[in-house]
Image (cartoon, rainbow, N blue to C red; front, side, top):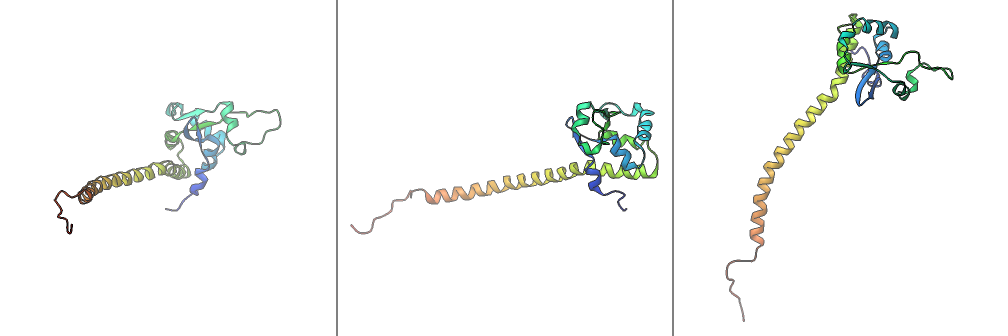
Amino acid sequence: MTELLPEERIINKIYLIRNIKVMLDRDLADLYEVETKVFNQAVRRNLKRFPEDFMFQLTKEEAQNVSRSQFVTLKRGQNIKYLPMAFTEQGVAMLSSVLNSDRAIMVNIQIMRVFTKPRQMLSGYEELKRKIEAMEQKYDEQFRIVFEAIKQLLEPGKKDVKKIGY
């Protein structure tokens, strides 16, 4: 299957807000190639599917802390008209039940792969860590035996050594 979107394009739209990886409504709308307004209408029609741990609205402070390049440049003294909605990994997964176009399905699959990739990599590292620890335990016992043998060789002799000469 060919990639619909470059992975980097998706990664660059994932933010850490409230110590949670999220994607903003306008970024998701951009990826799905729909207007943010249309995207949010579809979500609002299905609010029961999006509890707070799936989706939340940013505060003004959070919205200002997100890169300014993500928002339409505002004239001095103006505020953002609508605070962005942030979707967690579960919220993005739930979008697949709300947005049914072929593009939305394909984009959603790609986004989910990007979200889960770090976990897959981490599980691979955990397995490697377990194998290394098992090897260390195995070789620790073998080295202990070798070191015991070396210690016995280095201890002063227990035999009486006959002196040669005077």
